[in-house]
Length: 52
Image (tube, rainbow, N blue to C red; front, side, top):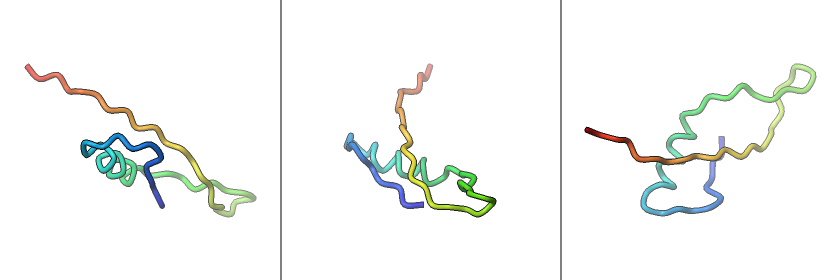
């Protein structure tokens, strides 16, 4: 998998997004049962965790 950041946010979020996406597991796209290369776009949303 060749992941890259399309729109940079900075503050270490780009690296965190790449790390998260690198852990994703995808089933390969197939044509007639044969894996084929594809390109997909994945949005990564960040939020703050509430701690009490």
